[in-house]
Image (cartoon, rainbow, N blue to C red; front, side, top):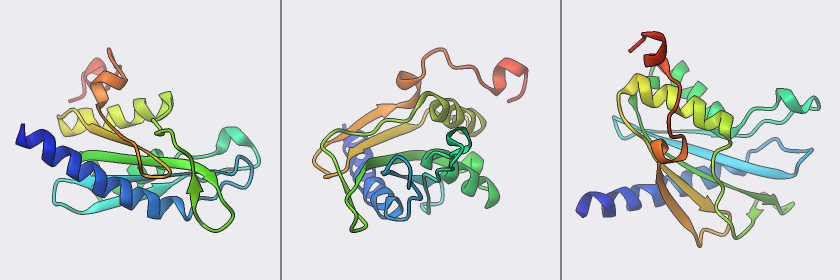
Length: 155
């Protein structure tokens, strides 16, 4: 039971870091900013934000940017949890919204890659822009029967 409480407290910290990252979103087309914060095994936090492109298919999600940043630092196998927050940009550097943001299917698959390489299931903390709601999920529940490195004999 204590582990769950600590997990939720860590989720709130990650959501706060994700909110800070969302302030730097490049989302001129959707006007929807997303921030992500990864908790690493050493206690450090790596953040990312969405980066849109005029050719929408080339846009990058916050979770992907955070994971790529962790990879650049040589820490991809050290990811232990993620917090995600997003909402409509308010024009003052903030975001608004009452519903928690969950990772898209592509990001769930990319998170699964990191989780598989790290050998652990990841807690995924999903927050509303106003901070009132934080959902706590395990990646395996968000992406059951995932395809990963193990399916290709890599582990």
